[in-house]
Length: 210
Image 1 (cartoon, rainbow, N blue to C red):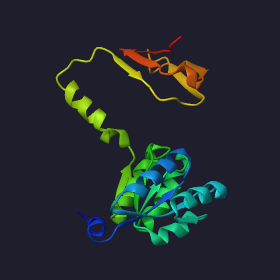
Image 2 (cartoon, rainbow, N blue to C red):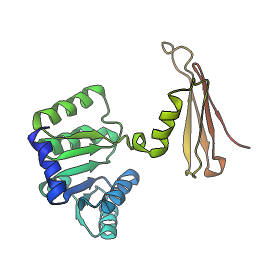
Image 3 (cartoon, rainbow, N blue to C red):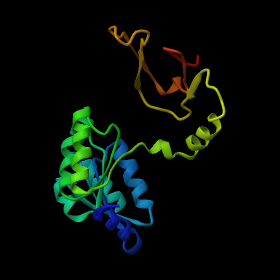
């Protein structure tokens, strides 16, 4: 464990870890809510380019709002980054170079080169860099992983039970990865859910209820 990482462990034992959230859109608000509930964490503040939204979230959780996220970095030990993917590298880099530990929403960056850059900077600054693959820690998925270890998988079916506002389904032909892929976009409303995703070999198909 590095000196910086050791300091994080000590902070949670002695004083709450001061954490901020950069980007309080859909995912950022989830991070903000969860952080506000953790006993070893002090949600210090939030930052967003949308001032009205940022102030609203800050008021809701009774924390400070920072229009410039760089100012937030002076007051926290770690941050959750939930900005658009194209900004992950620039924002993540600034945070790590400021000695602030980072939990960044997936994907880690917009390219492999940017991802490798963030990993290298984290190593150089002795900071923790974690990608937010939170579903890996979902108790349901962890239990499913145990069950499937002794089973042979023939097909996969996934169903979304909660509603989702208008979105786009993307169905991709995967028969020959080397050839140009064909795309089909279908706009669906919340009433079309749940849907099933089935895959047999290279073929993927979405089945929507009537």
